[in-house]
Length: 67
Image 1 (cartoon, rainbow, N blue to C red):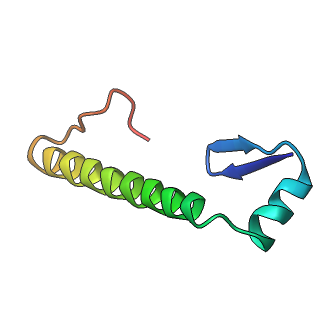
Image 2 (cartoon, helix red, strand yellow; image 1 turned 135 degrees about the horizontal axis):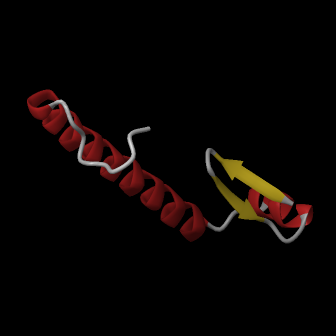
């Protein structure tokens, strides 16, 4: 079974794993998951801000492929 988050997908060994994860959650797992998500989102926002500033000044982004 695969779970998709945008372009990223995570392979889950079986559906029982998800059921166990949410019926008897491991607090450390969720703490790490939320910290990773928060950090990734902040990094993305910082990158967007830097790219936006450069684009405003030069009309070009700092990416080789504009999305």
